[in-house]
Length: 185
Length: 142
Image 1 (spheres, each protein chain N blue to C red):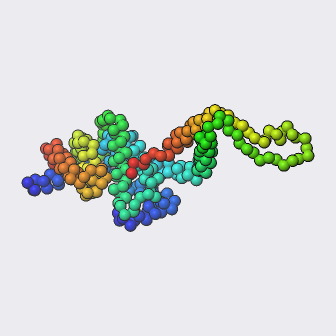
Image 2 (image 1 turned 60 degrees about the horizontal axis):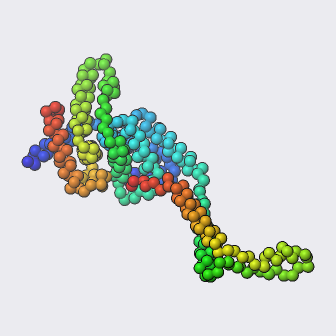
Image 3 (image 1 turned 135 degrees about the vertical axis):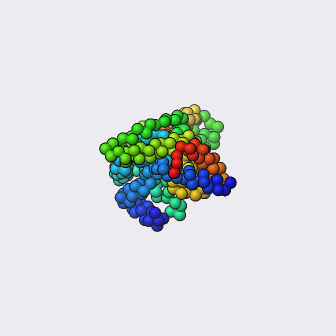
């Protein structure tokens, strides 16, 4: 994903080309949804927040400073909206990942077994991530999945880089302690 | 120590990647684009609202109020008399009507009451207009 390409998409969107914005949505929708889900732990609400994020991005695009990264801006909006929603609700909902198991076909046994093992591992990792505080979940996801630097993460969640480093270190230790004996690579 | 940190880092990285990204519903993008198209349709038909009282209007109102208060304090008389233009002599028997326009006498008490009434009336309009504008002032949290 090259910055120039994104700037072209932004410029086209500002000229009224909705298809260009759809391309931006396609690139970021999974990450935005994941970040929202990591905070809210509820799929319907996470989808709602993700939609709100993109609507806000679309309405505020003319104010976006093209020298900054689009991803940082989008993730920052996602974080703010998700945390605000979480604080307004002040509740935690644990969802059961039943739908994951429904995806796999039972007709081919070897694949079904391997897929079930993988699904179980995914569930363990997700459960461990959800044991972390909300902000730490976001940090872990952004750092390891998007390879975003500590400095950029600090801009997204509005904390100092030092603070982010400490949280990252602690979260990493917790996840390692929790998962080390459960998952083998 | 550093090796342990690296080991932990690699392990956690693999674990997080294993968790993979969550995927929204299949209709996420289509429904979002529908909302955006709806927004664009609304934008093209929006009527730009003009303020109830324009800045010039507020200026005129302000001048009137200041004038009234100025007149109130410029004299200690209980009755204020405003001289008017004397109409030229007209050969029509409108004497009774014309004589009414020679001068208008307004009691001071009436002016005070009128000033207070105008002041509170304008204050009400100010708060009503402000309340009407409230939804457009929402901070976009950026």
